[in-house]
Length: 407
Image (cartoon, rainbow, N blue to C red; front, top):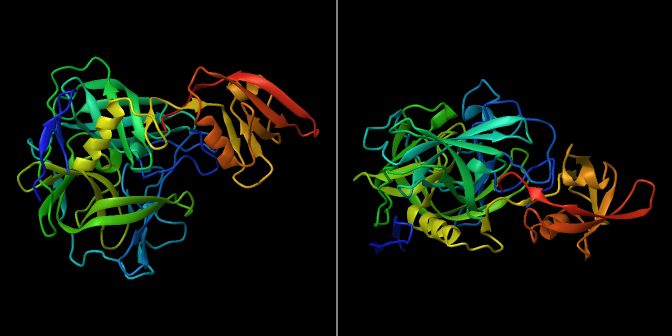
């Protein structure tokens, strides 16, 4: 199916066709290459890794143990095999599945042409005492970068290296779409960059493809994993490693390319060398099932982010941040499990054991209610927080919300 190609106001070709509860941080969370230790403190507004389920036409669910990139790297057991559910042996379990039956081609290195428009993304997860890595694609010569939301999720600092030139830039979040796992970031002071070559044609089952990215989060020459398209329009359920924070991603390209942790946000090339998808998820252990967001959909969402859309699914910039971790259970308010030192909540006098009952006059009956309430505010806004202390007394204080980590 041929799609039309138009040029957006920012100059790139467009193929047409808040705060979060802990201990499980913000969805939609894919595997990043966490190259430092993960801290124990989850502050309302951070990130996590993932496991995948694949919804089949017959209604069954195949569980894919482990998930694509960017990769978690505290383990020395490998980039994908070490990322399954605790106690799992990797591979698939249950359901009938739609996975490929052949073996993916061995992973090699990207060609000089495949390096064009590809960047390595490295983040500092300040509230998790960790670092992460993934991949992105250059949309504009001035440094607008397309990537997965989970690549930057939880980031307090982002640096980007252009693979072709080795130039490194600091970056800021333009906006995110956690629901569809898409994000746009902007490089500081960039100009004259070569952009990724985006396809104006949709792929078909059986087409040869190559997944390129920062496998393992190690940087340098990108890896290139050849394979073919196995299925189109696939839906998966992504969760964290414990099976919590389930989220649906739909309309995905399924391949048997050996997508690895660290490849997230990278290009999926067709046989002509054009980008047909953005690598997003893959299985860990056993037969590989890789998933990519069709490039037409990813770029369409990027255009909405760039245009300033700010709604229930697309978020501009960084979220407002209170600086608390909360107990995910409970129906009488949001019970505070911990307070970030130096954050707005600590300044207002909130402490572990207190229960937040209202934000700006809106009742809060659960951790989810707190998440929803805070999503209505921007960094720098003042809001009244009402809570019940450990002494049973009711308290209120006005706080100035700050900019949190990327969501």
